Image (tube, rainbow, N blue to C red; front, top):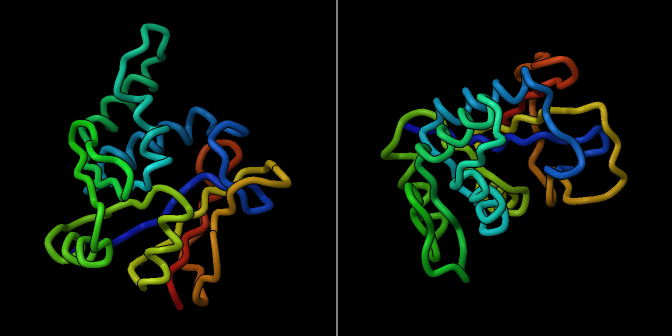
Length: 176
């Protein structure tokens, strides 16, 4: 049975923003490994459209950027949207029955399915489907933005903490 994991980089004050801070090289390589070993990723429309950046090669990319792009392209993706009519390679559109589709994925697949985006994660949290939350905490204060937790979350229990790279601390929680 697959586990549903919500994991993102987050500021000290709880916001996610891919433009305002970036992972250091060690953490970026960690993310390459996460994407390579994941069973797949469930995206909301907005984050999926941002991530489609990785579909086209850029000659200025470093080896790590090329490795991430390759891992992302090969990863299975499910995209939750009521407005999109088509999605790119290795992606399946979920436009209805999110709960039923995700329950079926968890039942039929093995490994970790990652959730991309706080709003989608909140919807899946409300349905009781998130098995684990991984906050990659960075020493940055943003003061505004999209919060990692987009709403009320049931009580959580810390099950692990570790440093990844030079500055980030990964905090791993499960529903209590």
